[in-house]
Length: 217
Length: 169
Image (tube, rainbow over all chains, first blue to last red; front, side, top):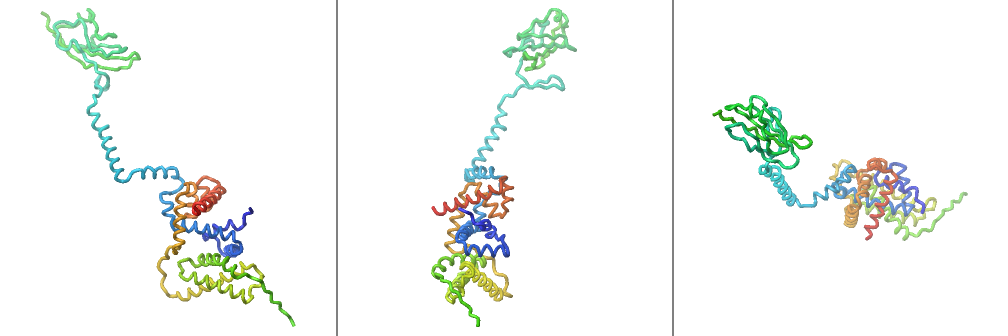
């Protein structure tokens, strides 16, 4: 069916965008064209409904930029009543405080090792077993707890400076005789063990333990 | 001596009244606004004038009956506005106009339509919003939605088609 040439003017006329002669011609036309009048009348009802109730109809629709976001946001916000939202918010707050505030208090954190003034690392616990107290003679071996897995231990024995260092995969190491002979009675010594992974990464450091070698008899 | 032949055209007055009353009413309401309490009186006066003029053979078929009635309608509206302007001269501005849909039937129809519009898919609602409510041009709507102006027209037409269906149900 052929479209009437005046049909395109219906919206302009109803939105008061037609003026003067153009408006008169269109009005005269719909007095003579029942189809155009019917369409004009129908559209006028729609436009009137939109104009008088637009605020209600388009409530929450601010524009195309937010078009995907708005319905989703509306669905979420209307999912609960305000009272339910308050309950949800309180529960969420309690959960957050529990997870980030309370639970860390009970969690055993990795021990903090001070290697030097600059180096502080966290790692597995590595406890020294022997010697940890003063000994009468130079110790025959040093022993510490085993970490398990493929780990390499490095022992450092110091006096005024580093006296001896050695590496082993065992959790104890025999002290060579020449080192034992260097240990002087009455002197203070300290020792420490560091554990490394096969890739050479430091994974544990023991505390530094001091012991005194008893005086010679 | 010059003879003037007075032409007469057969007009079915009953048909004219039935057919043109809604059109005259529409034009009067559009020009005066339904908030003008006298708009129905103006319509009745126009219809009466049409009947009288046709009976007096003043409609000679030089134009269509539609144009004839349109002319009477516009003249009467202009007269009414002039008359009202004279009466209202010196009287302070009236209070804000009431809802244009002030009769119960129109109000109910507008309510049903508004609910139907609210039920439409967002893509149809947003063109109705931008084009009819915010009164942007077709090109502006197209630019805002990132579609072609032709697409805007299609959506407007389809939305109206849907609304007609929804309201009839």
